[in-house]
Image (cartoon, rainbow, N blue to C red):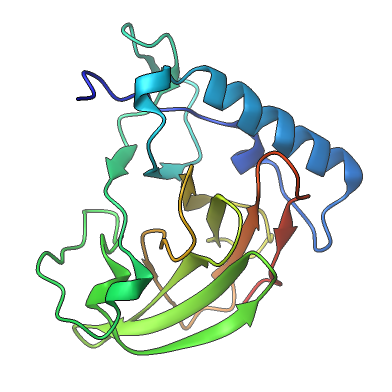
Length: 198
């Protein structure tokens, strides 16, 4: 059994990426993922999802892992795509608006698809949400721009995941400033590819 969970923060999630992603960003992303995985002990190499925000300079240092961590980070269990169509049992939104389980949604559709990921939307309690779904590979990043600069402000990612895994979901907005995209890769062989912003 896992005695502790390490929260890994990557500088990559705060770096704006374009579609297609440049060779420099692909190299950086592979390095960031590889270095992050080295921080995880062998018994802990299980899939996990992290919801992240732009981290303040005052982020606290986790003494146990030595990793910079923000109190806004939540490590959550994954929702599997193969359970779509069944009733979700545990659905909630946190204080920042994140829906823990996209399987709770209805009227789902795929907005964009790459070889590794999908950008999906659906409705829960009358509100539309967007999220990422992993198709191939083992890493998916759901990125949210809140201010219109098409840079990542917040997001959700899953590493060491099986195809079919979802990220957490974030509510859509009528504002043209808010946009979503999803990036994904196989951490050892594929370059990072992203959907367009939506």
